Image 1 (tube, rainbow, N blue to C red):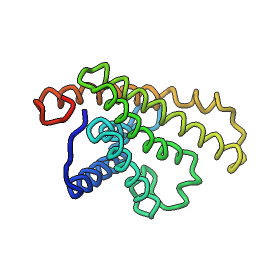
Image 2 (cartoon, helix red, strand yellow):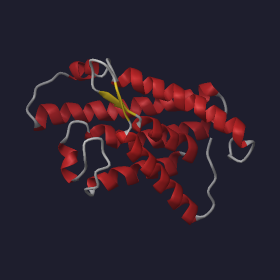
Image 3 (cartoon, rainbow, N blue to C red):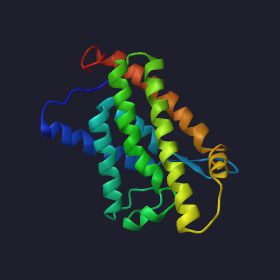
Image 4 (tube, rainbow, N blue to C red):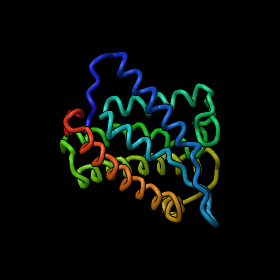
Length: 190
């Protein structure tokens, strides 16, 4: 489901809007008992891919990451160039890939149904965790000197992160179907 934007100005505006939504998502924190908190950042990254398509979705996510690296406190724990040394920075890189892959799969499937959108979101989910966990492994083991096996990093994601992001995939897919039905042909693939 790709919205068509004809002018350069409209493309810049929607990329900025989705970069802002991803930033806001970092600060919408849902506290859970006996664990950390869960943010809606990943949900907005999925929406960027589903609604803007591969190129504009990835651009919006890249604008978000670049804005944070420039020092604006848009990441969940601040901002600045030193953020690249944090173990979780790989997930931010993964967000760019996620928006692109989610949009790309939607474009190829000509997504209109829940299962099409869910497949696209799950492909993005895999991208985020593959890049994020790999980056985290290398930072933890080779930069910070904290020896941690990859399987331990993966298992640490299960109490909160992975189940929460799978729910985000399902929620984004449900909402995308609704938007597709509501748009009645105003969105190019609906």
